[in-house]
Length: 455
Image 1 (cartoon, one colour):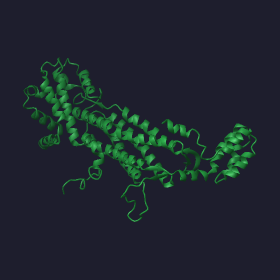
Image 2: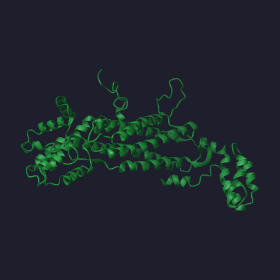
Image 3: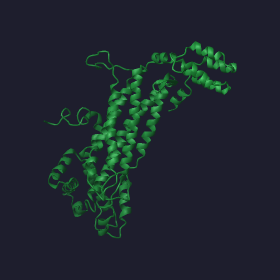
Image 4: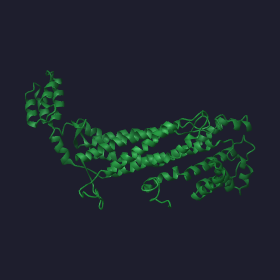
């Protein structure tokens, strides 16, 4: 069976391939090989540009340009050529090294120093740096822009609906009113904080040889400051240098990133479930799309499928991301290979997260507030004003205010008329009595509107 979107094993490469296309350039095997080539080329350029390493002649401007072009023009056909060499070497990094030497075989300057390609490197020096570059690009170029769109939509809803009163439901029961916009602002605020934590993770890389001690480097140039040189090299790639490692970079920064994404995903799961409930309660309706079907047998259905799809994909993403953050920092003694196959699945965690963000944004774009339904719910729950009435009674030292209102309202509704009759009997200043008499469930929203507009 030929591989296509219809026959792909993973839905990320099948049904949803178009929605995660932006990640493919970063997390595919082609993306990994391209980053390996980039690291090898940049390392060779850095060695050649260092005057203290006299045996490596500096490159001319045309040769530097050609080296840069090798990276910039790296195409799927080049990746296939590397894979063909790997079929013989059974070693992916060595195959890439051989391909690079062959690709530059016509360049006399490079060939004079060809043995400095992969100089003093263990494969993990190339791999861990490549993985860090992949994660940085995937985060900054794909994930965070998708998060920003979702945050922007929640902020937009917060502002649009800032003044629209809504009955809160703590424990699923009627509670002090809020506004629909304030509830959207709550979600936006949580996502803004989570986004900042994702962006703040400093991705680390090591470039210190087989077991992290510069053994090979110092065997060739024992007086040279390899630690400082290699640190500057890694920082030139936009990464943080990790000075203390075994053969592999310990992946602690990766775990921080995956945990941060997982925390954001948990916030989104919470949001999707709440939005699902608001739709179920009739607080939101969903705009119809011509030609869509909600049920194969019930023509009236308009299901909240976007939020359900998002919730499901966030769950898959978190299952994978949690495994990454728990497994990757573990390595037996100086090295084992259990991280290798796990790291090849980084795109899966990112993919289901990006897919979920797309679904959530699509669902958010369909929402329209049902003002009549919101107003009816509020008007049916005058008992929520027991809170402000007993609070004002406390202010004026009326005995047992909480207990009086509890006896009147707990577990049962109360009419507007009955509540106002009770307020009229209170021994409080007339201005306070008038303020309570004018209060309605819809007006008892505190600073909700102002908070919603401030996000």
